[in-house]
Structure formats: structure tokens, C-alpha cells
Length: 222
Image 1 (cartoon, one colour):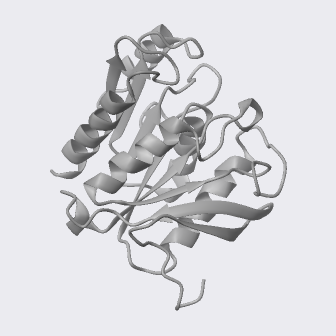
Image 2: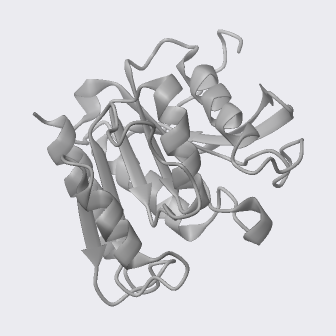
């Protein structure tokens, strides 16, 4: 990263950065200066759903999450995992993708403008964000529609940071009852179930955005 490049501006910008398996495509935007958390100098990196099922950083849930953080005053980074879009490499079953996310975090922090990192992920991306959190040690972790029955989400039945989970009551991809049981076994984890919607939050993106805003603000305003 060269000093003359401004990574975070009010308009979205696209960059190609060096990743563990080759080039990674990323998209950045500054947080709103009017956001209630703008003074905290926060950065969030958001991970997209399964690459082999059409998941990209332009997924509508991922974009909704990024907008929620942006409006809170948090700088945002979306990116394509290896093998997706213009990102180089091949799918690595949520192993290399963790390395991708950690590389994106390191790149975004390199200009020194932001003090704390948050991680978020949707579906497959939530598993990657959870695994990456043990190396990144974020200030907050958001897991959206996490397929907890398919991936290892925590290493000791306790996350190292405030963690929030949200899922649609009618999720047709993830076992909602299984997510409830998993969350109940982890004291302090905040779980919300949005009624009347499924895995992709059709018809409920406005409600999802508001929930994310409220949840993150509550967790970080203490």
C-alpha cells in the first residue's frame, strides 16, 4: 500500500491486493462521519456465503451488513474469497478462506487510520469469520445464519469477544433448532431469530439492517 492511496472514502472503492493464494478483490468504504460509533475509528471486514453456491461480496445480505456498519460510522471492507470473481486461487473448504480474511484485515489495517477491527460473515462466511477471530481478536463478531452443524465455530465453547448471531425463523438451509441449542450452550452469546423469513432474509433486509445496527451499537457503546 502506498501512502498516496486513500483506502477509505465516502464512495466505495475497489482494490486488488496480494492474498495467500494470489490476487484478492476487495471493496472499501469509509464509515459515515455522523454515525454514532464514528469516534471509535472502527473497521469491519465482512465475509460472503459459499463460493461454490454463488456466494460473492455482492450478495445482498453482505451488502446489507456493510451498509449497517457504514451508517454506524464504521469503515467497511467486503472481499471475494479465493477463486471468486477476479480473486485468484481455488476453493479450500473454509481453510484457505480463513487465511484470505486475515490477509484482508492486515491490509486494511496497514494505513494505521483505524484502531479496532470487527468481523462479520453470512452463512459459510460466518464460519470463516469465526475461525479468523482467533487470530484477529476482533472487538465484535457477527454471525449471520451460521451453519454450525457443518463447521467448527469455536475452540472452547466460548468466543473471545462479544458475539451476536441472527437467523431467519424459516431458514431452509441451516437447522434453526440446532443453532438455538448451540447458542444456548454459550453464555453471553446474543441470538436473535427474525420471524417470517428464511436463509436469505427475503423481505426482511430492512429489519436485518436495523437489528445489526442495534446489536453492534449496544455491544460497543458500553
